[in-house]
Each structure stands twice: as C-alpha cells, then as structure tokens.
Image (cartoon, rainbow, N blue to C red; front, side):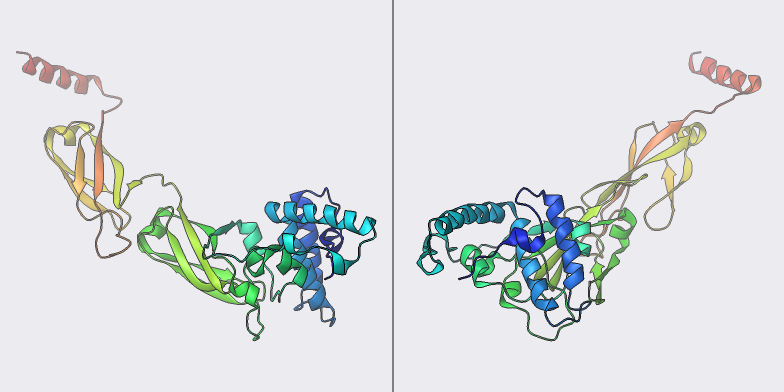
Length: 314
C-alpha cells in the first residue's frame, strides 16, 4: 500500500497552522476543481487534495496521521519494505451505529466543493470508510454519490433570522458551488435552537439548518409568548382609555382600565408567536404598562394638580 504524504499534497509544512492548511486547500481545490479545470488529471488531483484536507483539518485525524508517519519513517530508515510493514495495528476499526453532527461556519459552508470521489486505500485503512466528515459533496454530476459521501455524518449550519421572520415563516436560498440552488423553507414558530432538516443535502446525509433568532428591540420572547412595554400617559392611566399596541402582525387597540398602575401587565390573548407544531395556535402577548408623567407643566397646570392634591387630603 502506498504511503500518502498529505503535507506534501497541500504544499504545507508539518508545523502548518489550521489557517495555513485551510488556505492551501482552498487555493488548490479551486485550481483543480473538475468544473473549472478540464485537464483529465485535474479530477484525480482534486481528490488527492480533498483527502489530504480531510485528515489535516481534523485534529484527531492529524494526530493519528502524524503518529503513523513517524513510525513509517522509522520503518523505512531501518530498510524495511512496504510489504513487511504491520498495517494491522493502525487499521481503523469498523464504525458502530453512532452518528453525530458536524457544525460548519458560514465561510466553510460557502466554500464546499463538488464531486469528491472515493478515498484511497491508505485513507480507508487509517480512518475507515466512515472517516469522511469534512463536508457535503455538491455536484452537477449524474454519477452515483461515492460510498464515503453517502455515509457522511449529518451536518449543521447556523442561520440567523429576525423575530418577524420567525413569526411569519421565511426562506433562505442556498447556492451550491456547482451553481445549483435550493430554497430552504423555515416554518413559522421556530426559535433559537430549532433545526430545519434538508434531506440528503450533505453529501447524501441530511443537512440541518440550526436557527438563531436575533434579539428584537421591542419584544422579548419566552416560549410562544411575547412580552413588551407599553407607554401610557398619566391621564389615561388615571381615567382609563385606549392605547395603540404594536404586535408582530398589525397594531391593535388595548383598553386601559381606569386607575392602572405603572408596572401592571395586561394580556392580549393569541397575539404571541405561532406554535411550531401547530401554527394556527398562538401564544399570548403580555403588555407591561409604563406610566409616563407629563412634562413641561405650565403654572396653571401645576395649580390644578395642587388643587387635586388638596382635595385628596381634605
């Protein structure tokens, strides 16, 4: 079996940082991508570059590869032949049924490349058929997805949305390196931590959009309920009346009972967030009253307040 020098493949030193490895990979992957480079040898080179990156970008794989490399060099220095090397103790044990998730950044997500093909016997010996985990394969190719990619772990990709989008539902257009586009629908009622499943979009495995709902200037969310502060003038608080309240739909009129204290909370039923499992059902909106005192009173107005005070204390 042929030993693969992954550092040489990427053109980096054995002390290369994670950033240097990523930069080298992107440069070479773009150069040899089969959709860009029509040289018959480009696709094979592209596969070699990808395989090297799968190993050197993963701390655990890189550690094992470096340990193997040191032993391989000692074996060669002693005059050993490839056929006599003990590959058995380095061989990756078959993977069990466990499946995890790998989270990718926006930058890495956008830099995923096309049809990667299979991995070498060297890679499969050290890391197993399930060793592929660095990203989905996106390709125009009509060929069947490679077995390694079909066994790829599900992936997560964080998507930020506004509270308004979480209320109404929204979508995100995802464009793949090969030019293919898909529209990912995000249902109403999602919250931070919700996951939207895109079946088969991670190299044969599922891609999950992990939702992050951005903070809102007006509303605070707890489950399906919303909380807001409503300013009320002193006169309305004392005598009662109506005020306009903003919601995530259209504004509504809220009745303020006479004698309402600042800090009192009134419930507007059904004006909260839609329930993710049953969008026709909504939480409630809780309006905390904040009484605002009049400013810049005239002498005559102040005198009226004194009269009221004196009446209360008579």
